[in-house]
Length: 223
Image 1: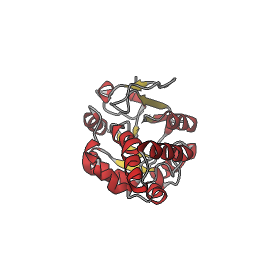
Image 2: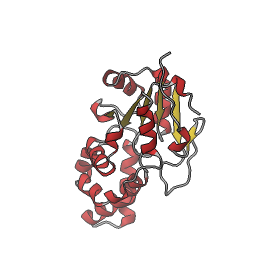
Image 3: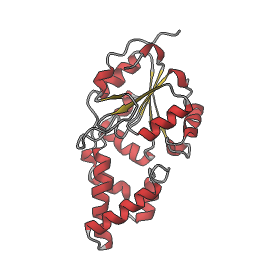
């Protein structure tokens, strides 16, 4: 599945890839509508209809991923609401073993996420995955989501990498297509980002069920 002799840098998405997407699915589709309904004296059904429509309007943009945007737009403390259900934050199986193996092999393990820094901080505190990573980059720092091919160019300025020797693992097909159009040569999708939902159609991308499939990771050798 992966020709490790061609890989020097491993870029990894967070939500749905390293972490179970169930937290985010539940948070945005159930918890926020519940709190929004309570605040505005709406039924759950009316709240969901309104919010799902508002989500759709900005899907795939930097605003969709911005906690400050939603706190302002919905007049809710999104960070506090995330803390109410933070017990649902969970690491996918074999992630820590894989990250350990990547770093021990001499390659860089780099988190590249659309998540807002406030959400990232909450999840890193809960999972302690930061200790397993060489670097972390948020799309908000570049002003572009990963869905935009220009994001990968901006990322190179902060995290020098050669697209031809880089592996990206991401559960978002639109992100994988964006990276593909930029020239990142090695791409993997994730079959089941949310463990409470069935596997997804990954179209033409190769994909993994879990990170055990990518082990062992042989040592990196130049040339």
